Structures are given as structure tokens and as C-alpha cells.
Figure 1 (spheres, helix red, strand yellow):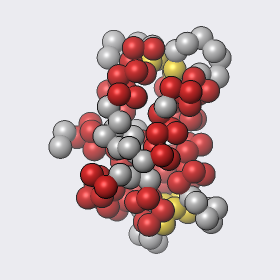
Figure 2 (cartoon, one colour):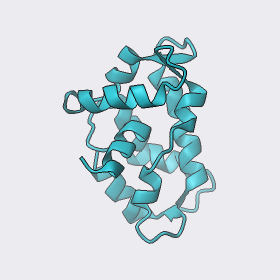
Figure 3 (tube, helix red, strand yellow):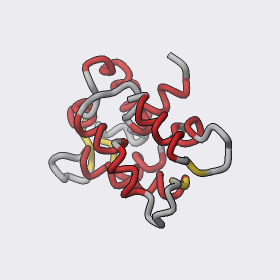
Figure 4 (cartoon, one colour):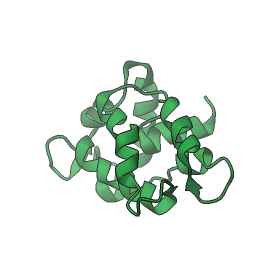
Length: 134
């Protein structure tokens, strides 16, 4: 698997995945909400803030840490192997939980990959391409 796909799936839990929770993160309505200034473009800062808010969705029991089981539930059946690898990489403390800071610290590459023209923001066609890859 190409490294950028791994980073997208691991960091964003989106590309090639079909679970409801992941769909919420990248569906067009969700991306439109992430566009906080309403200019029709998604900046990296808007994207990262949106991604950060996803942690609460992933942490189903609101314990402050997503267990490996909660993390894996966010992935579709096709991606279980990728989910296990991503979990191990993100769990920097080795405590079996991914805290919000670990989630936020994981380097999301999806934005850079989706930003085809390199202008630091996603236009509608780039957001559509990102959404279509899930």
C-alpha cells in the first residue's frame, strides 16, 4: 500500500474506508461544516480542527482515550490490518489507549496529498476527490 494511503487511513481514518463514523468525517456536509469561514475552500487549519473533533466520535465511552477496540470499530473490514498498525504507531505512550494529544500529534498526510495544486487549501474538486477515495 502506498505510504500516503496508510497515512490517510491511519491519520484520518478515511481513505478506502466505509464505516459510518469515518464517513461522518469526510462526507460533503461534514466538510462544509469544517469550512468555518464559508469561503468554499478548506484550509489545512480548518481540516486539522475538523479532524481533531473526530476524536470524540472515536472515543465512544468518553474515557479520554480511544482503546484499540474503539479505534478498530472506526475502520471497515477491509482495513483491520491497517488499523492495528496505525494504532500501534499512534499509541506513543504504549498504554493501550490513544489520547487526544496522540491523535492530534499523528501527522495527517491526507491534506497534503489531496491539495493537488499545493495552494494550502482544498477546493471543491479536491474535497470531492478526497471524499471519493473513502
